[in-house]
Length: 230
Image (tube, rainbow, N blue to C red; front, side):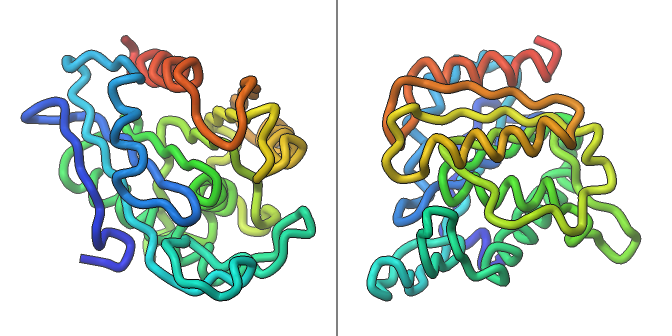
C-alpha cells in the first residue's frame, strides 16, 4: 500500500467492474467526502463502475497557520493565484498515475477510467494530465484516462512536460459562479488552457459556491455514460 492509497475508500456497483472513477477530495476533507455523490451521477449498474476515493495525507498547511490537515500539497500563499509546494503536487499526481496503472493491470481498460478532482484534488488531476510527461514509466508509457473532470479548481503549475497525448485528451470543467474559495476566474483560466491544448474541453458554470450541485453531478454522470458508449 502506498501513501496515496492509505485510507482509500472503494465503492463498486458490480461484482466484476470494468470501468473505474478515481475521485480526489479537496483540502481538509476525507476519502469519504464524495461517496454520497455517487447516486446523483445516475450511472446504471450495468456499466459496472468501481469508484476509488483516495485519502490525502495529513500535513501542515501554511495558509492555515501550519495546522495539520488532509492536503494533497501545501499552499504557501493565496495571492489569489496559489503559491504551492510543487514537490507535494507532483507526488500526488504520480500517485494518481500509479493507481491508474494498478487498475489497468487489474483488467480495466484505460479508456474506461476517469479522473475527477475537486478543488485541491482538481489541481492534482490537472497536473497529472497536463504534465503527464513527468510521470512516464521506464518504458516511456503514461496513463491516459477517458476524461478528466476538474471541479471548482485551478491549474497549479504551468505545462512544462506535457502529456505525450495531451492533444487527444478530454477535459470537463465545472465551477460555481459564487465560489469564494477558488475564484471563478481561476477556474475559467484553467478551462481556457485545456481548450488550447486538448482534443475536447468543456466549461460548465453553475450558480453555486465552492461545492458541487445536483445538476453538475447529473451532467458528469451523463458525460461518463456518453464516453462509455451508453
